[in-house]
Image (cartoon, rainbow, N blue to C red; front, side, top):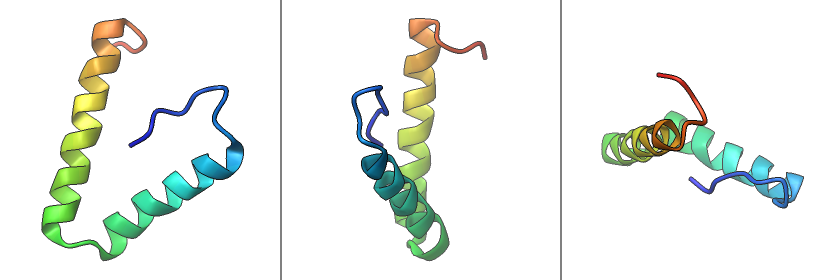
Length: 54
């Protein structure tokens, strides 16, 4: 998933959100597991940077 930034246009956020929903609703189990792994990796990265508390 692209990291949303202040510079990212709103339309790009909407497109990314729709992509995530499409994968979760209609994607194959493989696509879903790939997406979940991406999200978990991103969370770990945020934890390292100190942006969120686990």
